[in-house]
Length: 214
Image 1 (tube, rainbow, N blue to C red):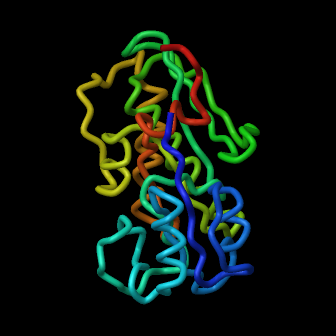
Image 2 (image 1 turned 30 degrees about the vertical axis):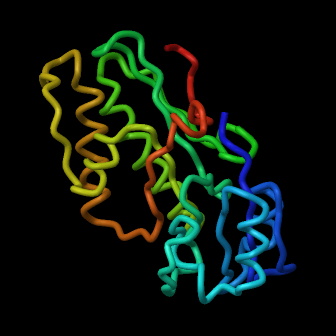
């Protein structure tokens, strides 16, 4: 279970010290140039609030780093979930085996999109497809929301705009490879501003789109 943290909002709707990330988000979401940071203790948070943001604030660095720097509006404190996002995950029965994936609203868990099952594929290829599906979905909405995935490999493939999988290309895998090739082509021909971030399972628990098949 995550430790209790305290959140300082220096610039936001209502500056102050908050005891929950949700309350902090209410002050900073969609607030231009919001300045905020998490602290391990109430005393350190209150001290930082009094000292002002110039001494403490900067792109989610840990408290006490002493390095103030300009951070983009979308920066979030390290170790905190951006709930204004979507989360994607894959469900498999064997690896390789049948594959399905879905994307959900991170805040509510509501399923936004789903696909499958695909006859035969791998966990990482399914994760890759889920991320790209999420990016395409958000692009159509004109949304800059974050996309979370718990797959390091899939995130790397998205950034590289290519996949590196040992899954053979044959009749049994034709469906997933067709989808993957289309996804790679989409990445190479489209631009997007969305961040694709690693879901921190050890700190946050299972990703919100998890199929619960472990």
